[in-house]
Image (cartoon, rainbow, N blue to C red; front, side, top):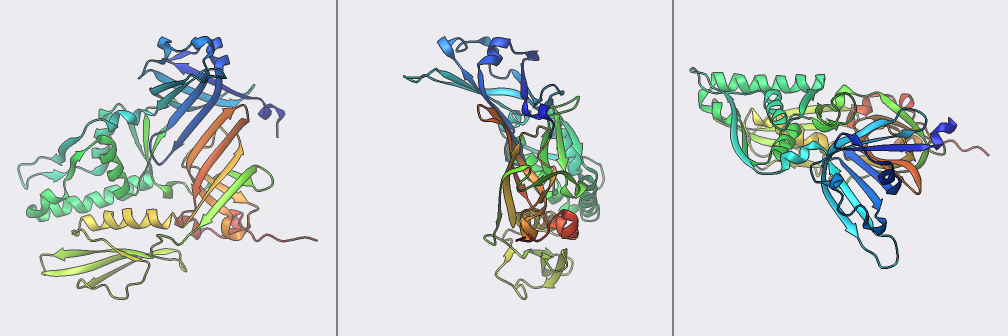
Length: 398
C-alpha cells in the first residue's frame, strides 16, 4: 500500500466556504453515514475550549455542509453535501466542553408535512390516465430541488408495469381511477419510499460529481453486478461478520385477485427456486393456495390484476436479499459508496463472494480513518459461479 494512504485528510465547507483553520483544528472527530435506509448523515465533534464556538453564526441550521475525505497529498473525495439540521453541546465538569454538529442530505426537506393528491393525465376520452411512475417520482423530486436519475433496468421495468396500468385504464374506464397513483396523507419522503419499493428501486443521494448532494438516484441492483472493490480477510479486511438466517425467510409471496370478467378469484404466487436460482410464478383458481409451505407468505389486502405485480415484487425481493447479510470494516476507503458491489475473499465458500454495500460509514478521529459497511448477498449473485466471485473453500495447510 502507498505510504501516502497513512496520512488521512479531510476538509469541511460551511455555506459554500472553507471553514477557518482554527475551527478545523478544533474538530476531534468526523463521521459520515450513507445508505439505503434513512437519511444520509454527517456528524462533527468539535472541542469547544472556552466556549469559543458556542454561539458562532457559522452553525446556523439549514446552512450547507460539504465534506471531503481522503489521503494527502492526493485529491480528496467528496462524500457528502447536505444541510445542517441539528447542533448540541456538552458541558462536563472535568474535561473540555464539546459541540456536535449534524447535517442530513436534502431529502430531509421531504419529511415535513403531508399531502393528499393524485398523479394523472386528464383526457376528454376515456378520462384520466395514470401518470407513469418515473414521471411521478421526477415531479416529487424536482419539487424538492433534487435532480432525479434513473438506472436503465429499473426504468425499463417501471415503464413495462406502467404500460399495464395504461392498458387497464383505456380498456376498463371503470377501473381507471384505481390505477392512478395517490399520495394519501403522506410526506413526500414516505410517498417516494413507497413508490420505489413497488418498482424495485433503491433510493440513493449521490454526493460526488458536479451536482453532488442534489442528485437523487433511483437504482436497480440488476444494473450493477460487477465488483468495484475486493477485500480479503487477513489482508484489507480489519473485521468481517456475516450472518445467514432463516428467521423471517420466505419461499414465496402470494395474493388473491378477483377477475370480474370471469367472476373468479385467482391465487397468484411469486417465488424463488434456490436450486435453479430463478423466480417462479404460479396462478391457480380459488382462494385456498395449493401446496402452501411454512415459508410461504400470503398478502391479506385485496389486490387487482394491476397492483399485484408490484406488490409481489416489493414483498418478495427484499425478503430474499435479507437471507445473508454482513458487516465489515476496512482501512478508510473514501470512494466506497452504498450500492457498490464488493468481493469478499478468504472467508470460505458460503460467506465469501459478492455483496452489495447497503450502508457505508466513514469515521475519522483519534483512532484513525476507517470505513465500516453493511452488506447483503443478493439473489442475483447466485447466477455467477462462486469461483468467479472469489468464494472458495478454505484449505488448511500443515
